[in-house]
Length: 201
Length: 400
Image (cartoon, rainbow over all chains, first blue to last red; front, top):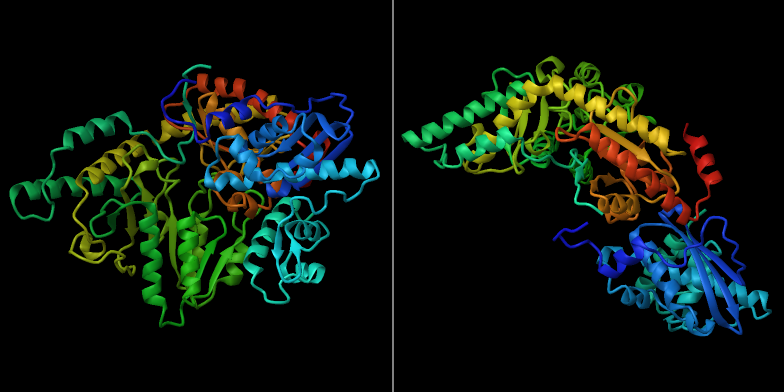
């Protein structure tokens, strides 16, 4: 449609939303070497990533998502980004890289783009486990949040996946913030994000 | 792609009725301050009093003098009522506020403000169709109840409440009654006299008039405190120089809404039913939200599980179809529509909800166009979705 009013998203987001790349088609037989699902329909978004990998290089990718325009576009952009990439590099992709590839997202939509890289990591972990290298990249790209106890964002993510959905439970799982407590604000923000992503069901 | 625009978001706002527009253009030069004593001021004042009478007539108040004040819109009218309750209730044992879980945010947040100020506030729950439960109302109503505020009709799902019954029960306990009739007025008959409410809120831009103007009906003798203090305008209940153009436009919009009400209702319900039946026929696995019969004639709220609301909205938008959604993504928060959640709808259904609200410019052809464009969009989003058809079917089993 030709109008002068700008769309609420960038042209790249619009393009990916209208013509998403690498979506798994109904009935398509895609033999995945690694697969990962994250999110929760109850929270408004859920994502599935399927990877074909040869010699640790991502050959091909398919995905499905239940989500808004930002979620669809960011998954599509991410799927293009990782083709031909070594899984070690793919493992370190951050939501920000995807947002950049899309030419930006509205501030209140950033949280809709944080699922893709998580689902991707779950899929790579799944592949690593299948190839007998479970947890190989566990600390790769991890950021230390609690400097007293060397607890990373990945540790928080892992704890949430195992059911630590509030601050007390997170502390039980990780002992985070039990020394100086300075990391609490940042850690709680991450906790909130991960609970949203990995849901409560 | 074509340039066709099908606007089906009339509950959000309406375009000007062509006759309102004409009327306003004619009145553009009615510039005098209606508080002035001179000839021009008196002319402006007289035009404003005509408008007041016309707005009164829309809600069954034939002598609107002293009972109807103009405000900047629905939010101000609602806030005026709650601010009044603050003044009356803060040093009074009678201070309980009863409202519903599905009110517009301006009522919900005003009620939460009173709650934070120490007022006991009860939010009535609603059933699956959005109707309040009168047993619950009776059980929370007591001699300490100051105000019962229940919207006449809901903006998202269109469900109409039995306000006469609310008044009957509330009056038995000596409570005041307010109804937010913003979405109801002009769509269904509203008669404040017959209902016996103390306060009713109206907004002009929902009835094909200009934005920035609304009204509050105050029954003769019911207490009122100004929200905006200043001059003596509006019987001292609402200060500020008269918004001549807005008020005059409101009067004309109200006159037309009353005059056209029956035609409007039959046209809207025919189009809405055609749309509803068409969607039910053409799109599998859906859920119609709201009440089947006690519903605004123009409103249809549908959940399309497996597809997310913002995505549906934006695909429809690209086809020129303008609607709204109850999904979290469109609201800017992480929670979907509070109204749909209050009806007991699971978040997976609320996230996939679309509100079609029809209006005077819609035609049968528009409905056919939507019925053509919508099904492939839902099918496409569902095929992209992680949610499987059998999960959707199971989710729907739970609500039907």
